[in-house]
Image (cartoon, rainbow, N blue to C red; front, side):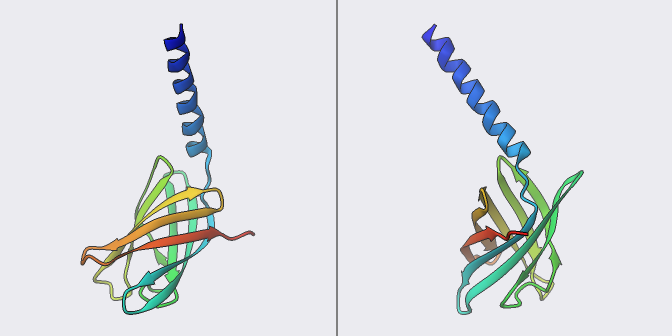
Length: 127
């Protein structure tokens, strides 16, 4: 009996977590910061939209490493973790970003194929 209770509790918890992830809406404008080696603090603006086929959006940064309002690509949402790529302003490289959301805050990491990486902290802007 005790074993059944543990199993049903685990199933119920999984359903609640899955429902939260599926119901979560990350759309809106997110402002964030990161440190870029040899460049300093970079302020990022990420605008996320949700459509029938998933998320899309644009990114801009204060150091102009990303062209203004560049479309994000390869967007995937898996268990509350959003990953996507952003082409750099030179059109040659791209940055892969991974974000974990918690309410109106998000944290994550960015990386390039060349080995540059850093952490990100975002906050959702109120309308």
